Image (tube, rainbow, N blue to C red; front, top):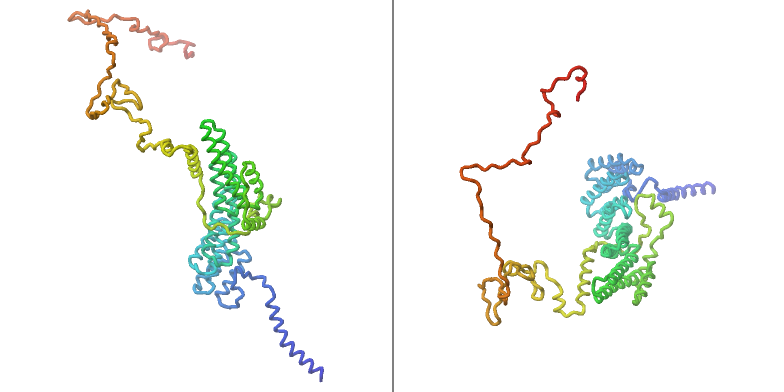
Length: 494
């Protein structure tokens, strides 16, 4: 009896406990056929036809049957326009094109994502759509020395995503992608600047590298860019010291001004990138110039140290893959810090040329009085000449610029104290000693004309040898008067 009661109690307990254990086990079991990131509504148990079509399309998408997935999704959108799954279905249509890949498919995916943002701008999935627009261009990026159009479009898309959806959970991922893109763009500008540096084109070098420093502060070689800017200014100072076509004092002033700019660039390397690899080179250059070496602040040191520690060093495998793969290598990109969300104004070579002209003018006018410095500056072509400049206007009477009249006349000035007559005429120049001028020689008399032709007779011109016509050798010309050839002579064409 006790055994029977124990069995009954055990069976009752099993009936109560086992279903709960099975339910818990079923909840913990991983669902292999579900991707919650792409289909967050897949765990909803529903037998509605729109849900059935949606699940069928997502299953086809996972298996790579993109055409089948698009057909099912379009059927659901057209048949059930008020379905609660229409938002995810619209986004999934773009996913089918995105995962299919290829230039044409990615172009179609971009159009689908932008349509989704247009129709559902306030939905949380709009941030995901904008993120994938940036990913489309990110996948098509070229190396830094190739076409950079896709890199610019990716930078624009990620910036737009961060600015429009600041509360999205995808913001950290978008910022890292933006850092990678700016690393590629910074490398491109860096290579161009170094090329100009190798050709000693200092204005172009400074313009390119200054753009790198301003637009991409997280670039891994920003210290090298600033160091090269200092070297460019130092190169200009050396060139002016060697120029012998200008006065020595002016030469030294120009060299001093450019040396100051070079020292300022070396200072920025130390104060802005204290943990970068090329800080010691900047210190050595300052010591060689007899300039003081600055000390960076603790905050800048900590920030730059964290930035340098977040970078991954380039390994041999990375360099090998860089030769094989299509896209660029971004392992050196920083993983901390805020990327620039607004593009600053680019520095161009004409801006640097204007600065050089300003430095040249400053060096020329240094030590001169204000009036003399102003007089040294010529007026423009459309401005009237000043009183301290020689006049280049022609004189009265058609005179040559700046001197004599050129036609033997001069303008008589009124005596001192007497107002000049505005109606005064121009008269020939009369020397002071007219008696010493020799008499002008009269021209020789022309001979008397003799008319040897008598009236009523025609003038006969004697024939000359030039007028006689040469006789023509008729033997060399063909003529029908010649005798006809006979016999074998007919065969001779000559």
